Length: 398
Image (cartoon, rainbow, N blue to C red):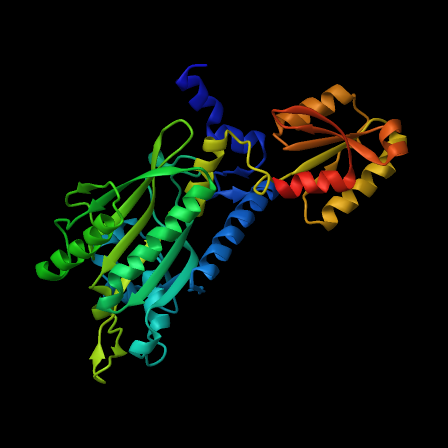
């Protein structure tokens, strides 16, 4: 098969429709609707993300989706980004839907006095943001107007920058390896429309570069492509076809703490500005999901598959046994359906394969009598008859 045909076969919009994962509607251009199966995949991704962040010492927060325009003027987003933002009048005041999560994290940091002993503070947020993209550039889940950023904002002391960036890079590596992604790294430096002092920028760029060098990572310099508030390390993941996707980012920010007067009391009992590390790993949940659909060609690993097992009874008299088997598997946390339609076996098997269900279990007279199931695995075919306990062991192992 040619590469172009393989790319078309893996197109996430086509597979999203065939596998009933998500849809779009003219009533909300660029704002995806998640169907039940798509919601399962999304929830599994988010639970995985939350578990990894909990283990890495992050605390989860949630900030409002809409805040006053003054806040965006204060953060600098108004000057640098307002043409991509959505606005609304409420009580004769201008509000904006958030295009980024950072200002909300600043307000949470400022809600009480902070000591140097508390730092680093690591806030993680799955935050819904809205950005106005031109209608011609919208593309399935890859380019949308409403999406969830897997953000984190780390408030750190100067002496903690390199250690914390190093920890972030460990977490990124851990998460990408779970999906079998290799990646390329680039260091993006000061852009033309930067905020703040040049010497701070130089210091920030040096800190990021030092971590990359200490880790022995290959990277390239991307001149002038940093965010307006600080330099960044960008991660480009490589999918199963070798295509590159920009996903993760780690950004140093010396500007926003000053803009929001975020301070902590240092060891000398003086007020000092923290440094902020902004970072995302998926980039956005929507875009990462689109990449995964194409990376796996819709054949999700067992833990992500919306339907993990489909049980197919051969005749009506086998349905009650099929339901018993389902009950046992569901009790162990698996997502299972019984296809009890009055259709031919061949059709049911083909439809299960088309839906890319990882495991099929067929039950007839023989299976009911022996209290077993005939197992078929996606791409591997017939695994023979197994007892339910052996099936559970097989699923658990995978």
